[in-house]
Image (cartoon, rainbow, N blue to C red):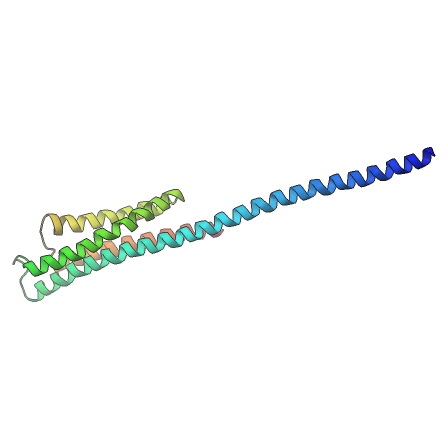
Amino acid sequence: MTTEWINIADTAVKIGLGSVITGFFTFIGLRYSHKSQQSKYMFEHKIKLIEQISADIDEYFTALTSFTNLIAGIAKRRNIDQKDEIPLNQTQWQVIRNNDELLIASWTKRTYAIAKLRLLKANGVVTKLNQCVLLDKELRDKIVFDKIMYKYDEINDYRQKLNEAKSAVHSTLSDFYDSLLK
């Protein structure tokens, strides 16, 4: 009879120990699986956030480029007609104001993009984007506030600086995107 109790106790210990070991490894597996799912979710969220940032920046760049191209077009026509020194007429100022309003409306997207970039700690992209903001300010200060029209050569130099700054933003954003994928 004592051997039966020993066999029963031995079987109980084997079953109990097996259950404890199985439970422990199940717990560990579920814990790591949850962390893996959480990491996957955060990665996907960051990718979607960067895609939205890129769209917001492009909307801002489209408005800024449109405004710059308008100024360049007016400057080119004035250069061809040799009317660089003649003040702009009311129609030209109205067209400039209308495009300026579109540019100002795009600033909200730019601000959202900067805020999201700061959340992601993409400070390099923020720095490059702020260089475009300074170029935006330079253009608007001269045209909108000082009411001084660019000469055709001046606006072409400005456009070159703006294109370089925009390329730097896109390149830095692309590098940041790539760093997330590694």
